[in-house]
Length: 136
Ligand code: GTP
Ligand code: MG
Image (cartoon, rainbow, N blue to C red; front, side):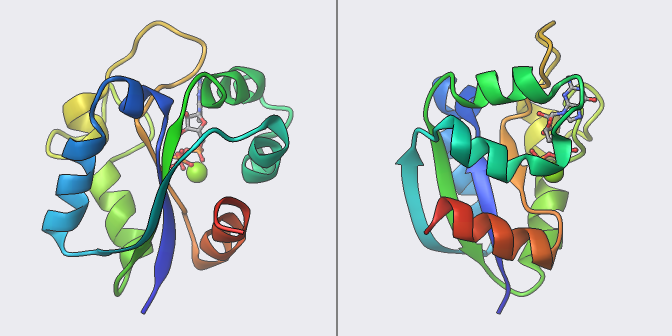
């Protein structure tokens, strides 16, 4: 069975949406393998977001991710990587489809960073790499 890294990002935790997001993940049928509240340091986030280094939203993204705790989840199930990305919706919460996590709970708050509530690994390679970072 496949595994992915899901994060409920600081906006999701701060807004009290962790339970609602977990309920959707569980209702979809995926299995929680490990879960915990984490306050990542800059080094962890630089590893996690290495592909975005140098982009204009990189610094605001790291600041945002250090603004409060996240919930890290090791999630399992057949095709869970693809399945959770579908559940999450597209990156921009303004246009993410209603019925998705980002589409139902997210919006543009006028900030430099897109606060879009969740992260999900985008490939098997990313999942393996990211799970090692967040669940060493
Ligand atoms: P994740 O599941 O969080 O990785 O989202 P994603 O795969 O849909 O997006 P991506 O990996 O491309 O970007 C990571 C994060 O950077 C996003 O979730 C946003 O928070 C932020 N981000 C990505 N693209 C932009 C952008 O064009 N502008 C801004 N302001 N933020 C962005
Ligand atoms: Mg991504």
